Length: 140
Image (cartoon, one colour):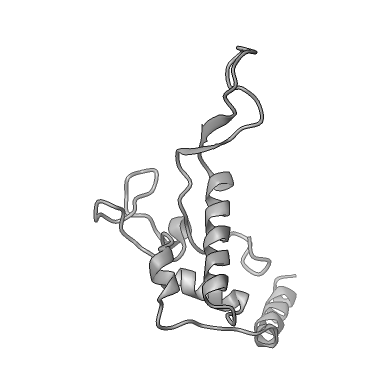
């Protein structure tokens, strides 16, 4: 949650994270003779490494881009539709809103070739933080 907006929690972007065959430290069954060290996993533990890897690939492809520029490229080139061409849905099977998907589902190829990025430097945060501090004083 944001300090100035305590009830708001949303992702910036979503990535692949369902049904990944991943390394696993021990066999899944009780068979001590099993050599299986893999498991099908889902969730942020699977999604985060993919998004981090995409960010690393973008930095490799565009070495002068700042972290903010990489985030911008990833967020401005997302998909709002699933592989079947339908809108991404939430757990109630309704079209998902920004609080569920953020900017949308990452599209690495499009992010690498995006024509417009928004870059921001640390000094650019000062007006935002000053405004947030003023708002926080009003809340307290």
